[in-house]
Length: 390
Image (cartoon, rainbow, N blue to C red; front, side, top):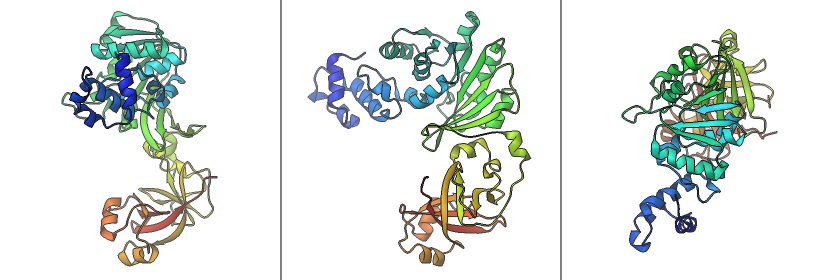
């Protein structure tokens, strides 16, 4: 894939601007900068996403679209801890998930329709994990039909772009259609599906006619992917687990959607502390359960919470309230004399950008300004400071 001379060039220009390098063809005779500049760009972009892959100088990276949809090492290794045994990855892609499965000692068959991508991935896997992965060029579903086997797990990460390159968010619109895999779930064979964080969880459970469990996977407060596990024991009311992989104990919340539906919100006015749930909990839809027994919700459709005493185990950001008032220029000038604050909105008619523009508030500083609608549908501003982490 890469010669010693090419590897040396990439290492020497690791911090250079790939675009500028691509324009300097005359300065590097004998080297294909159209080949090497994208490799440098990929390494710069993936230094945190795929550190193990980056650490191997001979790893060769595929085109940009494959890089975008690939799992990070953190999320791939999390998935590898969920499943075991004989695994078929029917949408192999760049092969990060297959690599993680093999890292855990599982038997892995990788299937991919793009022949050039199979060639690249086979080479990278040999660099990273030797010959422990079986690579197949072909359609994953067709391969399973022609090679029936006692798979322990079928893994699929369907493409989330339509025929014209547009993003799709419904399970049925992904390619391949996950629903076609349901007949393969028999005996001990289970199906693990990775999807976009934009996917509607409840609708996906309906489309799959029930699942065993759902994982909402987050890294540094950003929802990265959703995982659905389906077996013959699937249920329409599975447990949803929210994981934050930047924490030593990644599980931060778990519940069933039926519990959320049965919970009655306790509404209240803003008190001494304000809480903003972790994005993964909001994605899961646990708007009432997250309040627990001690917190009050600030409005039916306002997913911000309050309490008189600090609840330092709350799964999300915690703030001490400095002041609250009406959203007007005078209040802003009185309580923000520096004209600087971070802004967060919840169920408010203006976006943070619109608030900044209207009241000339600069970004940054130690304060966070919350704009929300209270239980009486009244617009409110709350000036807060973040509580120290215990």
